[in-house]
Length: 127
Image 1: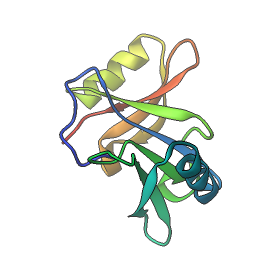
Image 2: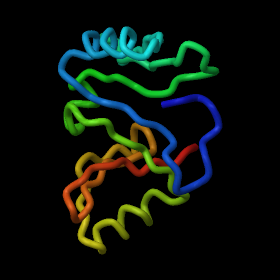
Image 3: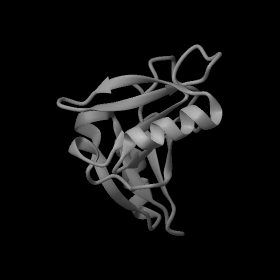
């Protein structure tokens, strides 16, 4: 995720997409909207932080559907909503009829949820 300061809580703090062929999708968005890419070492392969041509930092991530991302929703842009207390938000999600799709508290301070309507999003507690 971006190294810049996180936005206030309740905002979209990051967005990424996980696909089987991240390199092809990286090249697609580079040609389509002018993003350049920065490799993100995933221990044996690279995911990509995508940077706008005149941007001061990454705008999005394009990730391979493997390794730590093997349980992530595939082929959909995933927004990361900033929250002040990840554990509390997880409990509230479940109480309100949502589900936890991918539990990542130990590796990145976020979880992926599915809301009662079926849409997925991540809850991210910036460090």
